[in-house]
Length: 336
Image (cartoon, rainbow, N blue to C red):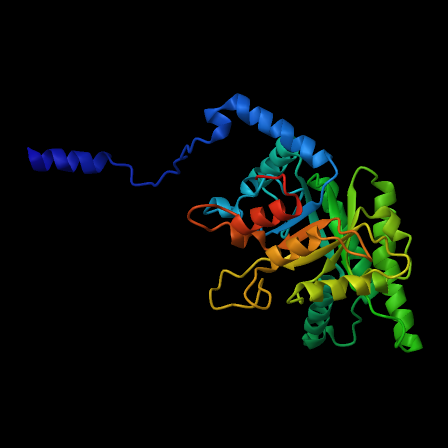
């Protein structure tokens, strides 16, 4: 009888594994009134004058294995979340973007990087040239490729209802360029920056952020359309290094009240003791936050952008501790 019962039991078992939603109660369910008040205060803070925080977020995992890969779990006090994979957003991502926008006033952006486009073009050109079937054929010019790519990427803003874009352009100093190279460089700049200007003028409800080296941009009218100008400072290893890079960017014509220094969080590879660290073992995010919170003679720092914030999630006792500490340093009244 025991064997028969066991056989019947095994035969009736459904061996398919089903997803189980785990309900982890938080303040939003434990004390709804308190949480509503918190969100109201959070939105008031976001709309007030303060040093803004950008967070670059890797959303490449479409089916998150943990909250560290989930948009909804980023610190509430982040003002702008920049998604690293802006295409092919799924329903979960779109819902989370809308949730953090409406409940926490966190805006979501994405980046269009000139250098990334240039690298992709070189790879496609090489593959084209190495293909024997293309003998005698002509590959599209870089400028045409650039314009088509930027326009296609900008279309994502409306398709997925992003709040804006970060346009990254390093350019080149024109001082030591020959005439041919100078003409080529200015032409590429005119295409990239010109499209950004035209797009912003036609999308007044969307946000334009510049990143790169503004000192190399000839048409400085773009600065009036940009809300912020991000200066990459990942190569800096100290506060003096950040100051040096910011001073180089703060040339005549660049609005010095829109500048922000970009640094990165540490790597998840424990053997990597350089990425995200300054000399002496200080976290770059903390050192840059302390620097941004200080007064400077040549410029007024508008906030702090942080790259690879996902890496700061994985802590047993407190998620995003370094990001949260950096935010509290530049805006001391912020607790979360």
